[in-house]
Image: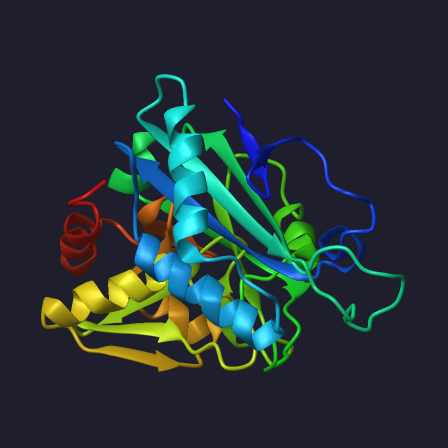
Length: 275
């Protein structure tokens, strides 16, 4: 089940001169659509709008994009749960890195089948590994979900078995940042810790939601740099993104968590109430 709208028209191709293709000059959002509702849409929009502002990319009117999302959702066959991906590029331009004098951004909306993840990932936890691919540090791009994902592509392809469900990526100085497709949280003494993202990493929509839910439940949340030993010393670990919600961590390197912790369970319940 894949339907595609490009600038509001059904199509399946863009010009080869689009800067999203030429330079990765753009941003994207991957959103969970459940029972005809895009979950956390306001937060997705806020991140996209902020990213476009930081990169100086023209963004179409929110109501226009919402109308296009609604159109796609009506064409989703009989699936109740599916994924909507929204890509915004700077649009077509001449050869060279300089912005085109006139910008007409490209917006691409597509629907995709819901991934068939086993229930045990959510209930019993997943196995993580550390990736050898290092994350580049650049404050100008930190937090953005931009189209330049080569580091994540390389990192994800460091393993091709089912032994691990996610890989964690680090900076050159050994700080854990995030996963190839997720953010990570550590629980220690009923406090939550998550890597700070001022120099690299993606500021996830579900990450933001988890921080909000944790504070409402009375758990302090801190952003900090931490190393592998500090991560492995946690009482509980879990990873997040807008599609999986929360997956507890069962193992990381040689550290094994024998059960899903109470804090993780409470947060799962909080974020899954509308899923």
